[in-house]
Image 1 (tube, rainbow, N blue to C red):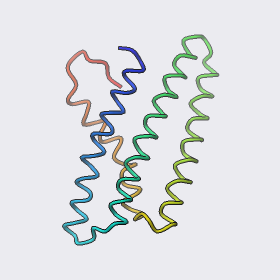
Image 2 (image 1 turned 180 degrees about the vertical axis):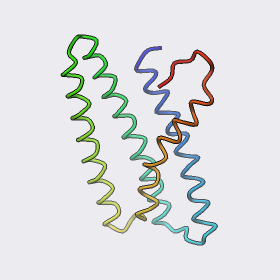
Image 3 (image 1 turned 45 degrees about the vertical axis):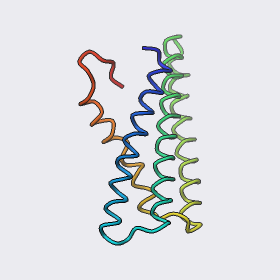
Length: 134
């Protein structure tokens, strides 16, 4: 499968999983009687940030793999290292600004970032045998 299509497909899986997980999270907030505008905005912002972070990580990994195939292993490692630092810094600044402004609930904003790994784990169970794994 073309690596660009794989990145888009995996990003779509993460986006769908985020929608489900954030929906469940908002349901829990509602059952506890704490559903508010800040929680809703935090869930949306956190999910969007998590999906974009995953997308840019996957694109960086694809570029690093291309460099490694061209016998530029150090260049691939540098690409991944820089990508990680930049993505982490941008995530921190954006989420900090949203929480500090009072628009978003802290927990509802951060939790979607933790959902990505379980989403990918569960998605592996639904893959067909022989299908390319991420």
